[in-house]
Image (cartoon, rainbow over the protein chains, first blue to last red):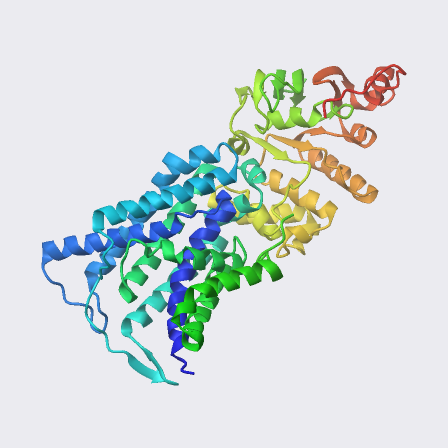
Length: 302
Length: 248
């Protein structure tokens, strides 16, 4: 068995993990499963692509940065895309989720997110067609790094980016007043208000973080695989499986859960065949729910 | 007579419209006092105090804090207005460390003052120092109550409001909590508390009100109320024909 699956697994796991951070935050702070989260990914990716194209049309062809397949336009576009996706999440919360949340029944909000997911996806298909597209069609040569493993410069850069973002979110959650407020709200919403935390502003931060990371995850898929309107929806099950495996509410848990599922998927592709890839998340999800429903870093509800 | 800090007039409040639990209750709390609100089960004591803290919808009456109308101000603005509330149960964040429990409540303080203020709380509650890195959920009942009170005091409130601070504690911790409250008053903090444990509360209180069926029925000097026959009748329900109110 080739060890190549480790690199593939870590990359898939990074995408899943970045998405799962948003899922786990929404679940623990807003207390509902947001099925539209995958579509935030796709929207962020298409927004980034649109900005890349605009820059290309304005400045002409820009040479990529040394060994990578992309240049500064993609980096600028990624930041714009992250802002866009965060705004999209805030907008959706304002017009849809916040109104339904005030009715106090989580299932209504979950169903609404399902509807929002379909609407967002169809809008993308309508606007960009369902034909796959790419940030770059350039072929990168993978460098051997020993043990029969090969990696491309893009892959290394994206793994580094994931590590930086995860560290950043972890520090935000544990070292800042905003992060402590988010923790407080997820543990006891009534007490959070009593100690002076403005729930509305914490909710905004939650959407901003979740939306921005979803965009990064989507762009990673776009760089390494391809861009399709269904790209985010297809990630939904692995993301939820990762969030639940890691323990709802835990940022390190979501990332570790993502990496485990990514590695398991890549391993399964190599061992039993690519057609079983999608089954892996299902099996892990069910196993976690049977054996340890609170997940790796989860804590039993009071 | 010293100045009035908290002035509650004819408060009406309840979770559902048309079903008031608090039905026109009035109390005043003066600077530096401990005021106790007593009452039989289901008298609406807890709802009364939660309404003051912005946690139960107010349908009538007014709440003034330091002369300012704070009636139905959103709960999260209360600490800024000067009212710090300690709920009866689930009054700490169980998965956060003791220190983070204190720090998360410091939102209204100047950032530079926060470390010093936390140290002041540790000085006032030495039991918490050794546990500063411990998850608050692992504290004993008495220590949790200390942490909850320290967290409320950290923002220099004008009035500290507590909902049954002795509830669910073993007798040893009950006396510890009341000694702690008496000590806090000595340091100049004004306190309003609702209590089931009338004897212990009256022992540390200055004045007390008896709430029955959502109204303030009786008031007096705390030390005299324990032997007051009207209180015995209202609070302990000693009249044979008296039926306890069923408004839990």
